[in-house]
Picture 1 (tube, rainbow, N blue to C red):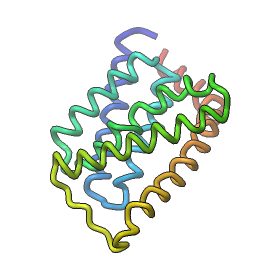
Picture 2 (cartoon, rainbow, N blue to C red; picture 1 turned 90 degrees about the vertical axis):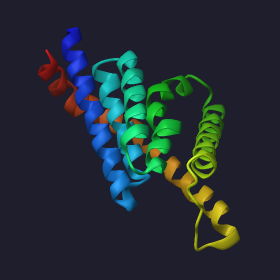
Picture 3 (cartoon, rainbow, N blue to C red; picture 1 turned 60 degrees about the vertical axis):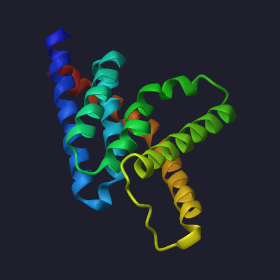
Length: 174
């Protein structure tokens, strides 16, 4: 594939990610779903164009999101985890399964905690919840459950992409 087509596909998928994060900024329910969808878009980008372009799109979307999107929580969730996770996920698959699971969960928890701390201390987003003192453990548990489902979804969606859509995308990009 020519470099101009790679750049065009990367630009279109970056724009799609920005639109999804904007929707996550505007529609409260999509605040955590939009970064996950953006991570899924990275599967298409990685398989069709390559890892180098994925990191460029990740950097561009992170900068544009921080500068222009109103909800920083959605953007920081993308920056700290979901934007790059599908790119580096293959490295975890080479490790023993138990070690890979532990490292993935550790990376996820540290990343989400860092994004929440930056939201609180840098951007001044108050931590409000109806759960009282149980809010942090409940949120952490629910985030981890969502991550486990996301992790189970990634290989299945990658398989579906390879079986059904990769040949179509490759034909469009020739």
